[in-house]
Image (cartoon, rainbow, N blue to C red; front, side, top):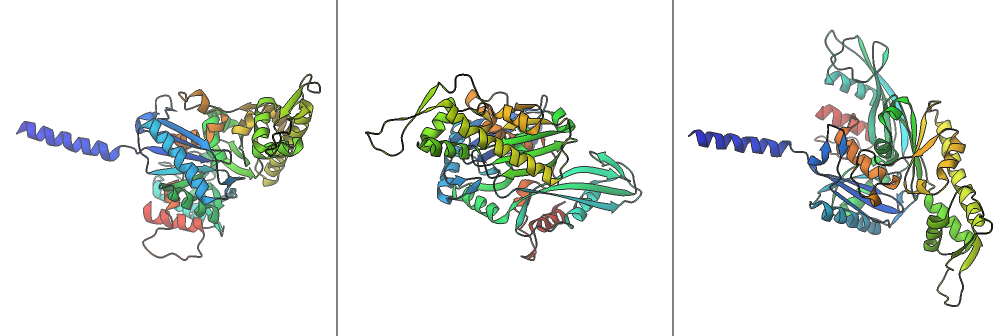
Length: 442
């Protein structure tokens, strides 16, 4: 009898453990130059030192994506399916759904605030939800969908910069929210692309935000930092201060534009231009570059055409203006946004295009502050081929799933916010749908 009771208890405990076990997390970084998939198993999260282990990594050359936007649904879905399949083979698991990191979809930031009255009791989760709903009710963004709803700071009776007000006492509770949105049309196209790859679409995240989570130190987030994600089709930035994300900016110019400039300037093929950029390219002057000659394959398939020969100084003269112009445009956009960048804020570069020689030096000159290359610092056991700046976005999605930051609404909830028990006015904006989700579920 005792044995049977013990067996039943063990069975119940095993069922509880199975139900509480965290699912496998799969992240897809959909870029213009490559598509990457990182898979993390539940046991890959080590809370002691806040590090992660990626059980599987897969990446393929991107297709069907240009300047951060999907231009061919079939090609993009095939690339996603191939990257996920490669990661699955390494991890030995099959994933059901993926969270997609992108710098496309016309990312934009919106700051809103809310304030509610309190009773004579400790602040609880319900009060936080009321304050968030009150703030969300003030924003009108037709044709856009929320990707992130992040509390920037809480205040109690005017006392600002409170990280977590729960269990505190006061008469009023205030919240400042950062709502990061994407184009509704781009969001739906992205969802259709993922579903065409026979995967469940679990939401979209802003690539500069998750790249910053992977590359920035805790001190940098607190003291102020600008993380610039330089991809193949876009260049984007995430501004942090006080431990919170303050602003997201994106520019539809990236490393692929540098390659195209080289192909035009040297009359070579795009593949040849990419090879030359990787082997000989630099955004700053170097010794003997006038005397050093480089060879590029000619365009077309004429067997009699010889290689294109040019001095390396010509290559630098093509690359440097484009890199400098891109970073200056981003700097001016950040200034125009009104988002305060701390005077001592650090500058961290991520993304594949940041690895081009001389880019860091140009960034130092343009932004007038020290800069460094960022890598996925919380995933220490990645292979060398997948541990560089180009893989920060995919690693950041895993870090966000494991350690936060705590968001007002999860990506999965935002993705399904339109699925309500009662019909919702189709003209309602996506954030209103998210607020409705909050009322029903929190």
